[in-house]
Length: 120
Image (cartoon, rainbow, N blue to C red; front, side, top):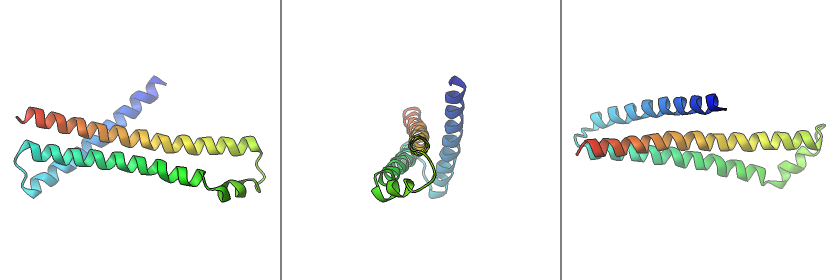
């Protein structure tokens, strides 16, 4: 379990570092010179990723709450236990995407705070 958590943190930190580098490069191309401008770019990127994570949950909720999909599943050859296991795995997958995007967004916001604090 600890290995999985540390692996997730390392993966999300690496992705956040890549996105942060892309934001910094875009800032250089746009002519940003103040630390506050770079920090704002990191804040916006972090908030956008957290928003995408929240959208994954709302999309999954709309699908799970649709009665026609639940009714169509009852016509399959799978038992009730198999259908519930599938439903739970889909739910957990949606929440894992939320956690991943929130971690990446959190790392970007933290980087923005550090850039603003160090740049003063």
